[in-house]
Structure formats: C-alpha cells, structure tokens
Length: 83
Image 1 (cartoon, rainbow, N blue to C red):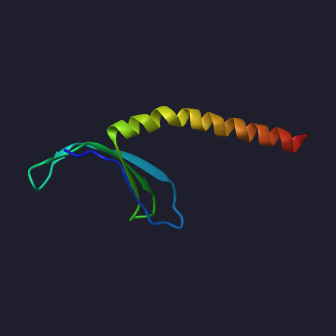
Image 2 (cartoon, rainbow, N blue to C red; image 1 turned 120 degrees about the vertical axis):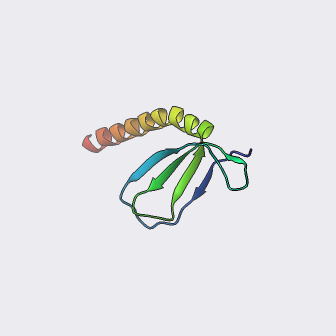
Image 3 (tube, rainbow, N blue to C red; image 1 turned 30 degrees about the horizontal axis):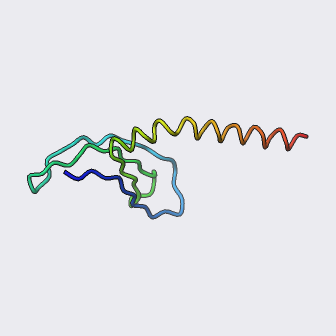
C-alpha cells in the first residue's frame, strides 16, 4: 500500500474551505486505499489537497503555532501603525 499526500488545484478565487475525512476502502483492483483527509476550496470543483493521516496530524500540530505567529505579527503591525 502506498500512502502519499498530493495537491491538485486550479483556481482564481473561492468561497471558503472545507475538510473531510475519507475512510480507507478497497479499490477496484482489490487493493486498499488508505484513509486520507481531503481539503477542498468551496466553489472550485477541480481543487483539492489530499493528506495522509500522518501529514494531517503534522499539519494539525503545526497550525496553532503558525496562527499564533501570524496574530503576533498582525498585533505588532497594528501597534506600529498607531505609533
């Protein structure tokens, strides 16, 4: 079984994002497709980011720190704009 994350996207704009769990299933060749997390851009049918469960866990652990860094940068920029 090969498990990998991949990205497929074509977009010039979208109306948000959604993520969904796709459980492991047997494929037409008798093999087994691994469970994945699929992230889609709403309103863009040909776009998706498919993550292995391991990569989704890594992203979930990393996102809080990234968002805190962003919030700190925004806060600093706002303070500089006032000064």
